Image (cartoon, rainbow over all chains, first blue to last red; front, side):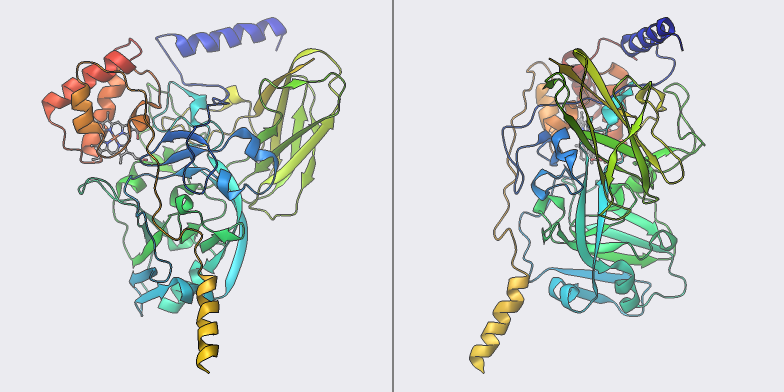
Length: 398
Length: 103
């Protein structure tokens, strides 16, 4: 594309955002650098805060320079406002019932002593992470890119628990329910149902996060961990597992967290897709943790760009960085130590030789060769799910 | 023997030693709310299930957008909102958090 054309289309794109007759959805870089709250929530440092009830906290960009996200900076997303304010770990049990040979009530203590203890390092990302990139606005929290994090989770395999209970022949669906409750008795509770086939040995019930108890706001004392999948099914404060043979119709399963059921998973605001499917597995994505937008960088100093990349567990092959607006791309160095479901930390070192505004862009590529599109090429969907545009930060070289 | 037992129980419970030992207090945040006609209806109808921050985080929106949100609350979340209150809340939201467009 010629330079002049480029300007033409970008003017058209920004006009479309403010213009009144949108013919198609438009996607841009998500909102960045939102204000951090003055008030810290329990066990957290002050974070970007959208709501206190239910608590909705976003990590800042600077959290994404390393492969593990610290517990006190890890994002928080609850659906319903009524969360128990006290949990007695000595009395907490989880119930397994439905189509099983033996109904179980397992205490936390028994979970930690009577089952094989396993660990998995995995990315937890809200399906609506980066939603503020979509225009017209997609319904839901207008996250920047900090509704994600990566932790080392320790717990017990779900399959070991189901084996101990003994699944009956016609068992098909596993329903998970946490202790979060709606404030109004008629509102639907947040229950997830997953098909048995979706649940492999990597799925665990975790009680530990980065070597500590799960923070209260991240689902203490027990949450589901489904590596590779968006976090809408990682039920927090898990208290009840029910095995059934038929699927119940539940609001959060049937209406929320769904995308157009077509090849490009996209639609336009005027012409919404009639059929939808669950958001399910994560697509390939990367976020730059350093430098921050607007930073001043000394001319010819050695700048080390750092960030994280991930996908659904297929594996990140490369993270390419461009410092010339996407004309040329160079591979960065990857830290491969934490396993296939984890953030791959990347770093890229260079000397900014010019002066003035400089765009730094990062693009992850996975083993299948899937790569991130430019922000403007991410296609619109009404829920604002699965944004994975190439991240760009603009610094000033002085 | 008794002493040993106590030590053992001590050990076991220490593995369950919780980071948080008493009630957790989730802080209240005060959101800047634009006062005006109809706010009472918002207060009475919209803040029982979530904070004001949750409602306005999507930024200024069209009248249709706000109308659909209120409908979503009624249909999906069973919010007990009367027709009259629906209209009052809609007028308030559109006036203070509207983008000037009907659709």
